[in-house]
Image 1 (cartoon, rainbow, N blue to C red):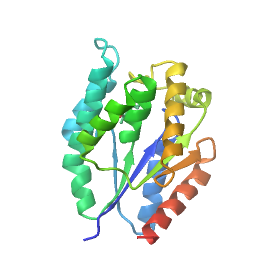
Image 2: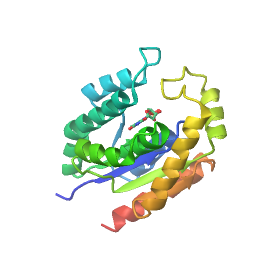
Image 3: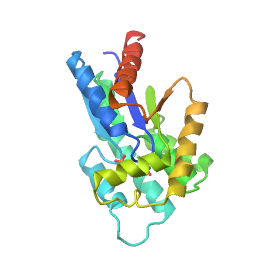
Image 4: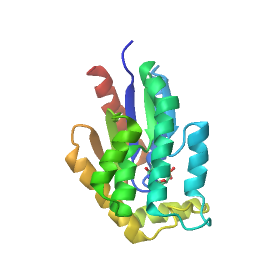
Length: 210
Ligand code: TMP
């Protein structure tokens, strides 16, 4: 059986990527292509417990190393229990965040060494990388406005200040610049439908080219 297609969606909080995961799933399903939709941190029983632990605000202060290792633990389990088997079964996987988020958030955001991150990400993923990644780029001001408009309680990461998210945005732009064959950079301020069409066309192109 042909290996599946592993597609990830990335960007700062409030960039609109989760809406685009749902749109891509709708459009691919309507075209007769069943997808597995998942997210990080989380996606399995154990990984969802780690998500709760890493995102709940108001616990004791969490060190950057603890935060990093929790994201990586979630990823290792996610690959073991869900992504790996789905890829082997030939499925299309739409994953809301993956290893690029660790580079952007823990590397550029928290200042963890990119060299260490490359090693640890490689260990957690066993070398598995997405086939295609969409990064939705948006200004931090606009993303914050969108999050405020949702009127929900901010999680531990969303409670960080604008400077943190500016560094993360720079991280994502750097990742896009250094991985042009894997990463498609899209302007997150465009309309939902325009973005959904661009994502759908790109995925179709990849599927056709296999
Ligand atoms: P979400 O809001 O997109 O569900 O993601 C949860 C938060 O976790 C978000 O603020 C980004 C952050 N995150 C990291 O800091 N590092 C990671 O490796 C991942 C996957 C997410």
